Length: 184
Image 1: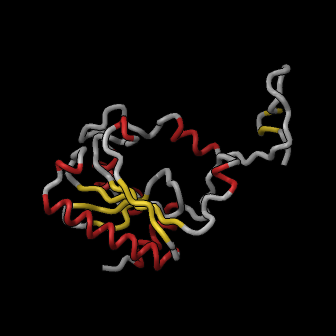
Image 2: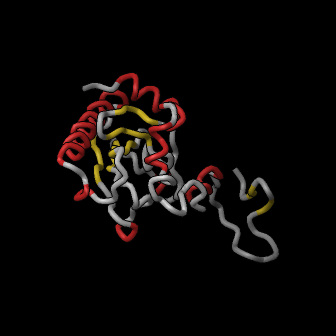
Image 3: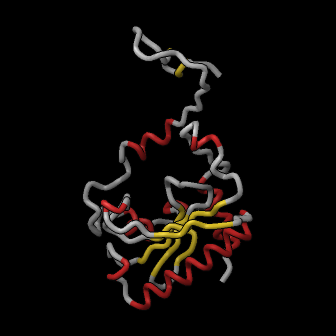
């Protein structure tokens, strides 16, 4: 690799200092950085978690549909197989869920862990909910629980030093594999 960007050299007109680092260009990530797919108004009509169940499973990246909640792949995953468990109902806080919604989200989270363990041999998981924009929720208006599979050494030099994530499989392929092998 070289210090050349596809559109020209990295150092132009004396700006910046040349270095010996290789570059792995990931222009697809700019949609996330710019917030291009994030609704300005995450009300029920604009919310991606409200829209996804109305699409085909493939187009919406829906892995499994329950009665009160569903499982969807994260469009901008932290790791391959990064899932989210969402209630169908447009609520922003866990405390706003009904007992039945919370129970089904818990069951789907456990199933997600088993399925990811079987399909991708995940050896650990990060599970959590960021509630509210100040707490880091990208879509704060619709509750979603992250289920992130983890493996030994998965946080290698790429995200730490290279500040780049690598995903070995297309999201559509991951969705199909998980949906096919989902276990109750």
